[in-house]
Image (cartoon, rainbow, N blue to C red; front, side, top):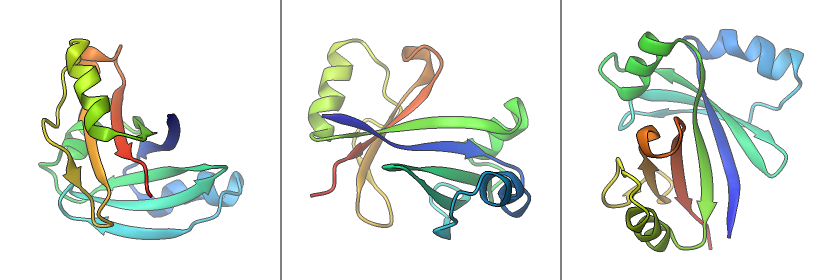
Length: 133
């Protein structure tokens, strides 16, 4: 089973971005968290069964900061939730998809995740999340 978990949008300033996403569009701001291992601050905005994540780089050497510098603000990645992360990764490898994350990582909440490289996905950075039990 696959479902959209979140869509991540890179922004240069979380507070300024909220003028559109929260104030104009009306999405609720659930929380803001610092994710030092990824070099970002994240604003979580629930939207239907998933959420929009606004990513502001905090480390100029992070992948998100390099993305913002090269491409400007906009959609950074699509996150899909899968029942079996390791099985999904094996299926992608068998299909010739290049994975950025060779072994699943764990975020601060303990959820396992991995990334597929845009070179193998038609230009979209795809994150896979293990489904929560």
